[in-house]
Length: 420
Image 1: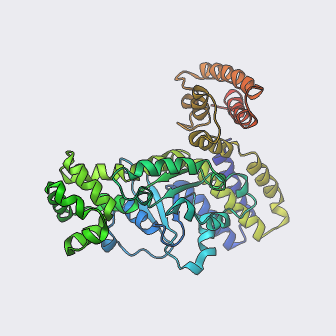
Image 2: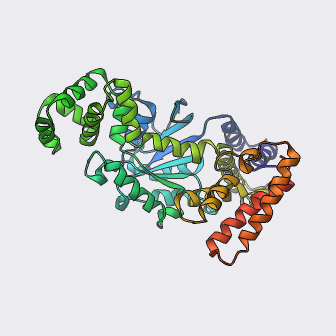
Image 3: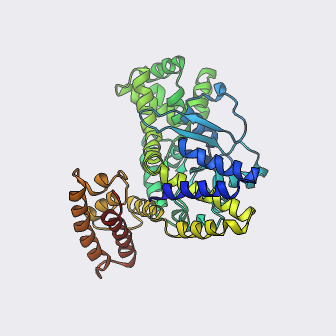
């Protein structure tokens, strides 16, 4: 029985135990219903980090055309070529004094969190720590992706600013304290991403006209926002794209992205929005059952703490055992440490470990890279288990590498002994 199945079983039994409590029953049914929903992803961060801009970019809504969602309400994001289907919450929508409410939403309502910071040194981790202030959550902080949401500013708004920002994000992903609170760090130019998703015909025409101007005329205008924004039409464009977005868009048009569709697609890619979508697909959508099970178990924990009763004692014991032994959460954590370089195995071993722990698919065939009937899968799993037991005991490896190998060993043991 995997983690999602154990969580569902516990929720079902809890509904029987608490059938006489309307509040507990409503809470438990809500968590059970979430198994049939898209993953819930909250977007949060300190004031001015760009949460609302990123949410608008995801939903494809220009700032002056956004529908007014109720504060702290989930909005549906349909799947498209670069993003999985999600329910998205703009956690910056509530007032600053509602911080505890935001932390509760991140802790109890979200399956995953995109935590935004304008710059690495401006990361305010108090909200993340508050969201993880729960005995069970401390076991495995596996549901947070950090986002450098104004990454273009790290490179001074240059056309290649995102290249520098990605290097910063990579370094930041391996450094404490953020490495202890998140799975990975992704660089995004939020304003350019929003413009890419909501570009209007008139804006493309103005960008094309700018790109057609001689560089000797355009380059001086692009030296500063004040120069470029001196003209009212250009000022409006500046507010929508930012100086980085305008520099990049005019460069792309000159390079052959000279239709609205082509420019929008490439601008979205260069803004980092596509890379963020890939990260959300990798860390959230592909492991949605595990993250939903985690949310359900934490929700059950709330009921057991608020309404203790003798008949719930077996549920308390089993919940503690389930959370303590949740190997799927250890797999999620190991996958992120391998991807970010926080644990370094030899290249082919690192890739194999990432595959075995479910980073590229949870099915046994995907984990073992073997498309064969069950007997052949068992045989492949047994051989893989023998090899990884050797790695786990290899004195050449450091303690972190041997611990990583031990996690893979447990995965292989399950592939050998449990139903496929």
